[in-house]
Image 1 (tube, rainbow, N blue to C red):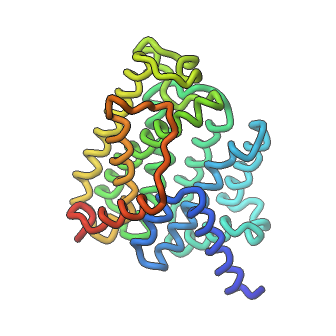
Image 2 (cartoon, rainbow, N blue to C red):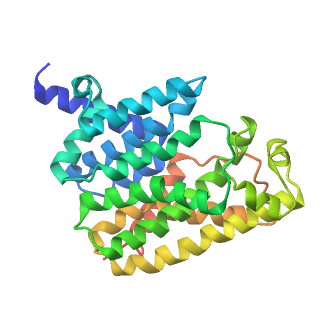
Length: 287
């Protein structure tokens, strides 16, 4: 296979991976130019690879080994295997073409090492650190592909990522509780008279609900700030933040008194596309 054909196949692999496992981010790239879309999909495919390590291993050690491979690849060690890994090849291409920093990618790997173990998320500060180095970092890296870095974009990426990261913890609650993994801060639960076992039981209690409501409130505050900051960044970078419209929808649903946080929720891909399309034409995301 020629180099051009291999490159095209790697790009298609990344697109398919993101479309399958992270459809919201995949759909958001459809509102950006093709050259930028390819680089964005490489970043998002890398995130899928790292986020799914927990699902693919039965013990932490094999997961640590997989994550170490990615760390070595980014730092330039063990470079020989990159050509055989389409996601790694595409990621290196995006890093070189858009001069992306390596450090946020390394921190993203480091934060996701938490996923491999069943230790509870200890505090709100720990959760905010996790969301900053994962969801916020992805927004920031994606924005650097589309526009020149700025303090305004960094500020938007941080708040947007905190809102999205907290919302993702809440939407994943049924799945995480079933495997006895706790991302809702233990300290927050205890402040409301709840604890891990109440969450792992998968049934709503007034105490657990109070903690979850407080978490929803924190996410909504960050989201309000993010939407206010959209007006202060260049129009061409705003489509990167289109996934926040889904975060807004999820948090609104979770805030309803009759919403059970332990019941899984699914959204059709058509609904996701429709929501993003409508948002793309709105005042917040338009020119």
